[in-house]
Image (cartoon, rainbow, N blue to C red; front, side, top):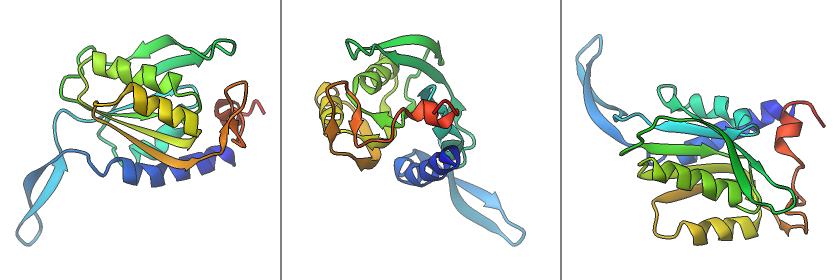
Length: 184
């Protein structure tokens, strides 16, 4: 049930997140006449779920951007220091002029999201939109401070009350990855 609801909510958040996707005009032949429309511009957007919990958001996103390329970042938070580490990466080497969409269900301390966005900018991305289901005010403030002056948009389902002393969102919803994949 949780997995289905995350996918549905992600599709709704993706509508807002893709509002600024770059498009270009095209003319197409209909059965009656020519018609003007738009298509997603090249280079195509890159969707980057942060593993593992971000995978639960992927299907909802690609419903709206079926031609987008998908890359992956595996990140984990050290539970003692709360600092992120990157353990896996499958992204194009050159992201010059790319719009990127980062999927991370929980924006708690902001560490993983900041590291992911900085990783994409280091590869040449010019425009990053992060889509999160739930955020803590402390994490949101950390992301805004760390990425000030960069072309970053954050789309949130909700902002919860606070972080607890362990860096978990309160009241939160627990570990999104565990809930998505049946470990809770």
